[in-house]
Length: 361
Image (cartoon, rainbow, N blue to C red; front, side, top):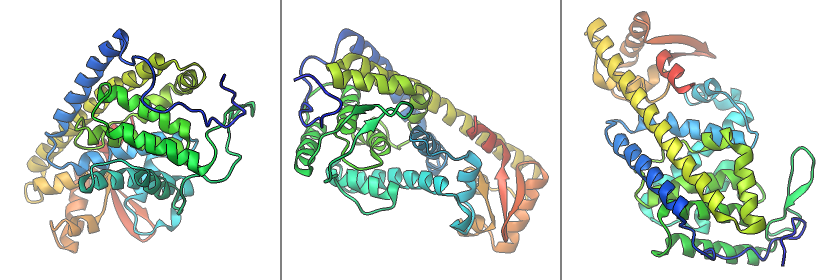
């Protein structure tokens, strides 16, 4: 039966897809994407304090993934929200982006405890993002529409039993030892999750977190630091167009090539971002060592790179100094241009200027 966007797609084919996914073009692109991802993984292992990456690159991924869903905030709002003591002044969009970061981080830690990705994993992720207790859709009426024209372009499967059956099939596919290269498999998993559309809201962001977690589960990344959503933001219309090509005519190759291209490009960009952060960290270590030898410690400088903003309490909590001494350290770092101070409510916070500029590119 021909696909009809107005009818619930309960006939969504199960995985694995029919036919050969690993065409000559796909295999060639898989090699390039796999090489770029391996280089990224290898570089991440050279960063002594992995929280530097988690608190910078992961936050950028959260921001971009949320922006795809028109949830928009700024780098400055995000970085400040991670630093200030009271969340009362944080706007709703910023809070939602921070919850995406929390969901990704929680999913990553859950993989340490139980190395499987299940429907419960998906539910926990979406509940964290949306800050609600929800589950698989059980009411009719969900449609995806063109935001400009209002035209219905897709009606996902309907009925909780149908949706759960398709999610069980997706779980089986994720954990099957058979099938194509894991990068090709990631592309098919992402399509299938989005086509099932198991939740009333948050499916896109949950699916993009699933991408990263799957790469970690497969041992292709040690940390969830692939900045994949930036590619989708920059190629958004093509992302949706190629998803529709699979739905409407089972054209898998263009979709898989798109996702492989995203992996390759963003692995290279993320790797360069890590190199830039590492180089800036080393330059800052040398600067503070030369200009402020009495203040200098490698641990203190590394602390300044965990977040673009820092404050006295972070230094105290890091066990690096008592409160009064910590305040003196931060003011001296400001005197040589490493930090800029700002008053936010009753707190002074200090911005690592060059790190902020780097992360805002």
